[in-house]
Length: 112
Length: 114
Image (tube, rainbow over all chains, first blue to last red; front, side, top):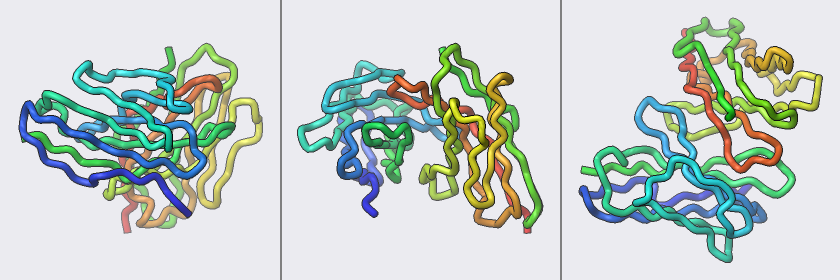
């Protein structure tokens, strides 16, 4: 069965650079969630989209932005990267009518 | 505000034994869902079990079962016949029926000892 695809799997950036993380949800899933998980931490909610509109917003820095496109894939754009942004970034998707999230394998971002 | 609390940062269990992981939550909502997610060393987040708050019957998935006490706002996970592959971080999570985000606990690191 198709799963949530995230790319890239690993990313190394320098401070003050920009990064773009991509998420391809499971087909026919119209909700996408983004989470940030620091080392030894629980996942922290960043933002979610439903039908290409932002539906909820968590502790997402102003330096970050995200959107969901017409094909339902989503991108998380991160600018002016800081060392503290180093984390595992998860994308999850869920279909309408089912309160259950299917997670991708995550993108490990390292800021040096 | 919704909160999820896991009071056991680390636990261990002998292979083939049974272990129970605790989770409590706080919400003023009446319709919500509870989950246990497993995160093995690969760090993939895998859904273990799901419980609808409106269902009184406890969810069961093979060796995994929950003890859902709605009045006490408690949602514990029981793992029977523990296997080495159960070694992982386990996160309790919560979502309200009309919500668009999952709230996670801080996790319990479970080690299954051969």
